[in-house]
Amino acid sequence: MLICCQEAELAREKTNGYKLDKSHIFAVNMLDDFEKYMKVPDTWTPAEIKPYTPGVSLYCFSTPLESYFLVLTFFLRN
Image (cartoon, rainbow, N blue to C red):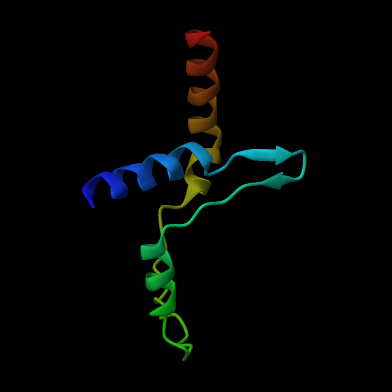
């Protein structure tokens, strides 16, 4: 049985994603994948919405003094 599993994995690795022509690509799924997809529940639950937390303000980088330093370091590096 172990040899069959290894051969199946090798076959999937070699054939999955094989281009048949310009617009068709061969896709291979293992039987374990079908069992996993069959266990997906039929009822849909909406995703949990996380509260908004503001991040770092990027406006501070556009103030004149900082922008001069950014331009200066850019030209000094190049």
